[in-house]
Amino acid sequence: MLQETLTLLFQLLIFPGAAFLILLAFISEWVDRKVVARIQSRFGPLYTGPSGVLQPIADFLKLLSKEDITPDGVEKPIFTISPIIYFSLSLTALFLIPILSETALVNFEGDLIFLIFISTLITITVFLAGYSSASSFSIIGSIRSALQMLGYEIPLSLAFIGPALAAGTLSLSGIVKWQISHGIWTVFLQPLGFGVILICFLAELEFVPFDIPEAETEIVAGWRTEFSGRKLALLKLGRDLELLLASALTTSLYLGGAQPVSFVPPALTFLIKIFFVVFLFSLFRALFARFRIDQMISGMWKHLIPLAILQILLIILNVGR
Image (cartoon, rainbow, N blue to C red; front, side):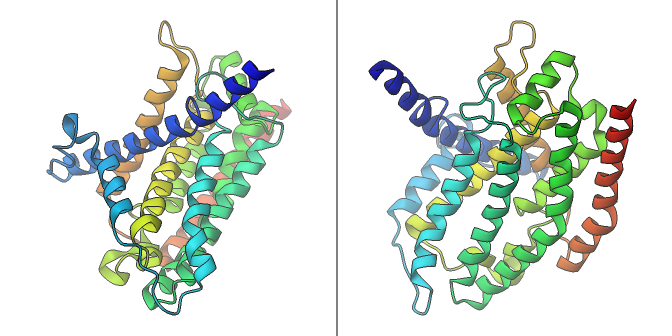
C-alpha cells in the first residue's frame, strides 16, 4: 500500500506529472520563440543554455524575483488568485493527456467533456483577471478575450467531438486507442476538423493573428497589463502550459497520440508530434497579421462553424454505412 502511494505521488509530482509537464512547457516556449525568430530573420534565445534552451526558465526565475505590485483600486481577491487558477487549470488538464502510453495518468469516460469545460474556464479566468485590474487597458483586453471566446468556442467544441464520434467514446484515451487499433490517424479521416482545431487553438492561445486581447500596439499588454512579479510569472507559465495543452490535445485527437512507431518509444513519438504542432502554431503566428475583433468573430461564425458542422455530417454519414 505504501509503495503504491509513493509511486502515485511520484507520477503526479515528478514523472509524468507536474515537474515533467512544466519542463515540457518551458521547452515548448523555447521552440515557439526559436521558430518565430528564424522566420523573422532573428536568432531568438541564444546564450542561456545550449542554443538558449534555458532562457524560458531564466525568464521565469527573473520574474519571481521582481517586485509584485498590486495597484490601487483592483479587486484584490480576484486579482491575486486568478494567476494561480490560470496556472492550475492548464496543469490539471494535462493530467488527462495520454503521454507515456495510450492511457492517461487520469482518465474516465467523458473526460473529453471535462477538457472542454476546463478550456472554457481558462478563458473565463482571463476575463476575470483583466476585469479585476481596474485598468482601461486590462478591461478592454478582457472584454476582447470574452468576445473572442464567443467566436471560437463552438467550432472548437465541434472539432473535439468529431474524433469522439468516429471512435464512439468521449474518453481521450479511448480515442487514442481507437486510432492505434485501426492503424490510422484521425487527421486523414477528418482534415477539416484538424484545420478547425488548429485555428481555434490559435485564438484561445491569443497567438497572431488572434492576439487581439493583448495587442501591444493598442492596449499595452491587454488583460495582463497590471500584473507583475510572481503573478506575471504564473501567468507566463500558465500560457506555456496552455500551449503544451493545445499541442497535446491536437496530437491525441488527430495525430494518433502516443502511438508506437517501429523502435521509437511511445513517449518520444508523442513528444515529436507535440513539437510539430507547436511548430505549426509558431509558423502561423509568424506569417500573419492581426485581425480586428469583428473580423475574427464573423470569420469564425461564417466559415469555421459551417466547416466543423460539415465534418460532423460526413462522420455521421460514414458511421451510418
